Image (tube, rainbow, N blue to C red; front, side, top):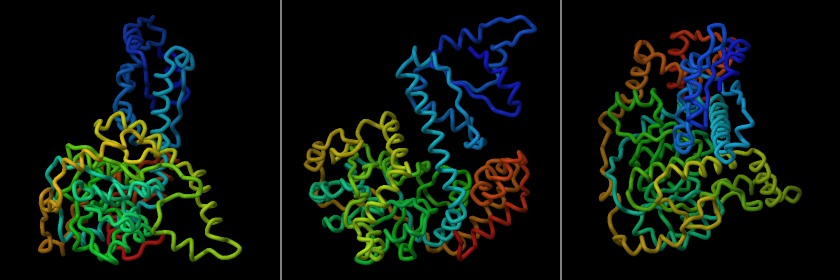
Length: 461
């Protein structure tokens, strides 16, 4: 009922406190609580503290939104959860669910922050390099065609015959890492989706362009894209960050807003939800390792491991070590937990073709969608329109940078821009700033970083 709050405020004077209450009625008791003038008033304290009440709120995306809103400027490493354990005995599953939602949010945010600190400069540099390769962009209209999304998990292999049978009547969105396995099964993706900004991601793309140019790409421009992709039509993904939105608006580039989720398959699902009203089928999205197998075969990175193999370090030993490291890393567990929670919020038309993963919930339904489909339709022209940007392309990078620099100087936008770009472009200074509670990083430092990183030809790290 809030009695711990004044104690926390007294001991941790600069800390921010947020509150979750599973039971709404307790909230009303706190608000109506009267105390003597010399006592702590829970009602007064609670009126100033962000709080979320009621089991109903815990059953939807309100928890995620509440945490995102109130922890936006907080160093996630410093967040601590204080539990009132008698609540576990009384509320049981509701309490465990709420706690797991909060813990998973902290884990995911921490993973994103650590990744951003390492790769932020590369992502930013990729974005401006890729602006020079948006010769053609795609507009879309929502359709009623079924969509198949392919990841590169081991279970993809067993679904290839069914996907091949369905490909004329479905739209296939493929993670770039699954392209080699699809090609081996005689399948051509309609859209290849890519969000990974690491240079290693290019190795997934090279096989795509070795035999034929992909039909279309769905990409966030922070991704690593090969120069061969300049003429491939692109469906641009905007991760809803303020700095990307400013640039897309300035350049009049159409984009779909899909927040970053840490894994390309989550982005692909949210894209599919916007593209179709029909069913969505998943294949190869395992979020797990199958014995020592981490991916479907063939896989783009296999050649790297085969090159390292010898009598004393055979390929199977390399595979065993790699699968063990992936398990210990814990990222797949984080993704699996996120997917399980998210399934409750997505439309009830997402199914798995394969019964061996976390989405196993309707593998036999695809046949009826194939029967209803229109065989041999021109999917690209029926559901998408291509826009030519070649005349405006030469000035995209300069205009994008100019728009960002103007936003840094604009009082209306400056705070939002700094919150996003300082951790991205100045991670060392940002860490020092948070450690010392010194929030001053000059506009000149940020402007210099924007220019240097956006125009850099080669980035270390």
